[in-house]
Image (cartoon, rainbow, N blue to C red; front, side):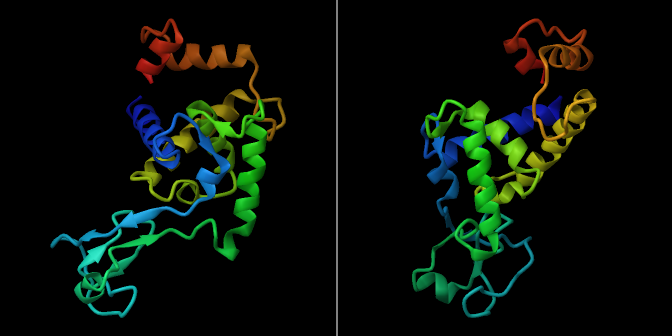
Length: 198
């Protein structure tokens, strides 16, 4: 239950950040580079070489998946942030194509936007073939999302018996069976109480 709430909160924060504070995000939002402002390295953190000149780093990107560091000289010269390049990199071209494909699949109404719940579905499907850190390079808890998605996948495949594994569809009866088993006796009587119990 705690992991479900943490996953929901992280996905909500990431969706909001990717959408630039809007209520829905576009494919362009997902594929755009993100700017990360560098922060001073805390004393307790291991020192790393500057990513520019290889001197001892004094500032770092706060997002651990980036591993971008600069020394005091480079920082004073104006290198105070960096941009992610995950989706513009040639080595990730196949991942970008996959993201485009999944986006079109999830955007069933052809609005060109995904709301939060569609973003969750997009993430669940897209992470079959790629890391969540490529979808949300500014996530503060990509590893927590990974663990949460693994748990969802485990439950999904448990209840998807007899259906094609790539169908990504569950019948209403299957969803009800999942809810009964997962939340019976926890006061779940509606969608609102389902969210509360999760």
